[in-house]
Length: 358
Image (cartoon, rainbow, N blue to C red):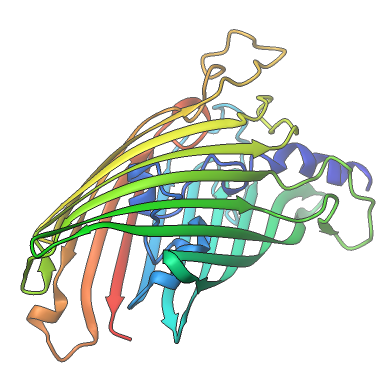
């Protein structure tokens, strides 16, 4: 049984959401940069400090699918319990005010080949003077591996508790009759916990490999928003947001595909919204080069996996104008394309966010 956690150790940093290769939420995925100004619905997983600024109840649902051949890279065949070599993710999350504080919750599942990872989070944020906010998000993580045994399959699971902490500041630079300008800064530290904190559940106890650690990251960001104060039917005429992020990943464990972690990640993004209805987003991610695989030093995916442009859009439907009796003020449907994974391959993300009076 001692070999079981070793296999988990090699795959852990390839578990999509744990090593900075995956961004939750269509707005953040389309812009790439999100630390200083995440959307409220996904703030619990992006930067929990944003929750204290929420004025409504935001509920979101996201789905992502990428079809890949079973022989590509390292993806093995698997049973119907998993995705049979394709990448699939689901996310459901919310953020809302609760008196003077903000709270949130989220559940995410990521399925690829014979592996599945899940994250269940709760978030809490407290406003501070001078536009500051701090937040914390405890979370429960699992990594499942499908193992073939005589007569069938068995699912082995690693599980752990961790938490993220975040901080934000929003400074109003200008606020006139016609427009407002806001400067936001943020920081988020993910997966804070001691090493060797995974619990292996395969029926009988087994020693944990000392290298089985959660990749931790520190993200720093700045964002500038220029928006109209004049509203048409309670929707702002325009809004423009620019954002810049830097993230450092603290881990030395090689992922399953043989590439070393890319510790330095730079992201820049831009969002424009017109009449509170149509939003367009574009971003660029640059990641430090990976260490080549020893058996394929000239492989086509060696240089900078996950680097590249991202883009997306959303349509916001003003439900309150059509059905004023409903508590839902708006429904936003989003699409994004993002290279946040190995080989710089792009994923299609589909999402929806409902804004509800609370």
